[in-house]
Length: 263
Ligand SMILES: NC(=O)c1ccc[n+]([C@@H]2O[C@H](COP(=O)([O-])OP(=O)(O)OC[C@H]3O[C@@H](n4cnc5c(N)ncnc54)[C@H](OP(=O)(O)O)[C@@H]3O)[C@@H](O)[C@H]2O)c1
Image 1 (cartoon, rainbow, N blue to C red):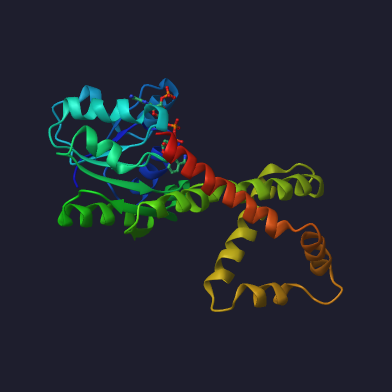
Image 2: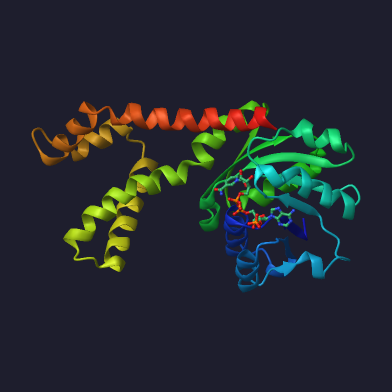
């Protein structure tokens, strides 16, 4: 895939573009179409190219990344200007058959990445509808540059994945807000130091998770009888924090399914 074009280039596209560039993908081969002036300025800074000023360029792959409400219109715009395009839709909720019904000469698949793609630590779920085998391989290889790729054989799994992994980074950012708040007091509002502490904490956690030690044993390594960690954990348990967290994830999965049936 030499030239790729992001149709809608906001949060998730910019994360993927950053990851691809970090992995060595040439910014000259990355194009975008975006009507939002703020996003256009960010894309210019990244040295990607506006497709509307390069209409004669052959595009090997389109990445459809607009909000669900704009998806069908944007899809039709691609079809109007390009013959037999290959399109990867990142749009949550809208099923493949809806796009293919409009035009069945496209090669089409759905992918659900997350914003950790920006640091090549992404996780992308893929469900293929009509990509030819060798082109599917190329798409998988492209997304593998920015993290882990899961190739699902059932489109419904994309909804669960969206609620859990697509939304996942935001859940952890949300929890970290409590850390930031408490650290702000201890560190006299030194934002740089607070950031460093949180990064070190998370990197340490990630490295521990990578070992063969299970999560319960990792907890035991930190929590001693009647110690501080145990006191913290007991409050979490008393207030059923894990149940709340699971309910949050379930709500996201439910919402993803609702969006699916709304379109
Ligand atoms: N954000 C995530 O973490 C994430 C993760 C996985 C999947 N997704 C999916 O990816 C899609 C995009 O999400 P996002 O958060 O990146 O949205 P976003 O930041 O709003 O980016 C979408 C961009 O597309 C522009 N746009 C919409 N229709 C257009 C058109 N016809 N022509 C040109 N530009 C157009 C929008 O302009 P305006 O601002 O003017 O509307 C906006 O700049 C969503 O469907 C979402 O479900 C997002």
